[in-house]
Each structure stands twice: as C-alpha cells, then as structure tokens.
Image (cartoon, rainbow, N blue to C red; front, side, top):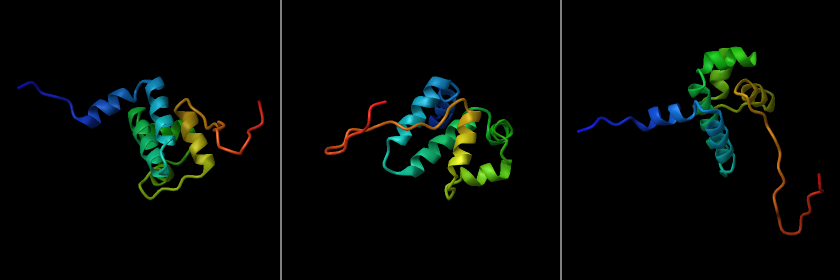
Length: 106
C-alpha cells in the first residue's frame, strides 16, 4: 500500500506558498468565529519558519507570540499587524453590501 502524507504535512507544505497562505488567511477571516483566524495565523506562522523565526522578523518576544497565538490568545491589533508584516501581509478593511447601509465610494 502506498504511503500517504498526513493532512498536517500537506497543509504545512501548502502554506509555504505566499499566495496560498494569504488565501487561507482571508478564508479564515470570512468565518464567523474569530478563533478560526487565530488557528489559521498559527498554521501559517508554523509553515513560514515557526514562531521563533516569525517573532524575530516581527520584533516581538517569542514567548509573547506563543501566548498571543495560543488557543486562549487574544492578540492586539498591533501584534496582528506585526505578525502579518513578518509574513509579508497586512491588515485591511473592505466594504460589504448590507441592506439599508451605504458605504462611501473610495
């Protein structure tokens, strides 16, 4: 019987690709549960070199980053921006269509 790779191995391999990692993070943001984004960010961080490497690139303390990305983590916007910057990404805001609410152009 041929040996197959585990889901985690395949995911980590996929998330090494910048475009796929960004698509994965954006898909996680579309979910209703914000914890899903935290799991996705943790997965991308692991795939892109691990916590220690991303912490060094972001200027954050490694232990603080471990805590921020843990299951009970609640990272600040500043921490999210630093981690995403180290991963070659940034936070953004996009308009959504809602009945009765107009979004100014621009």
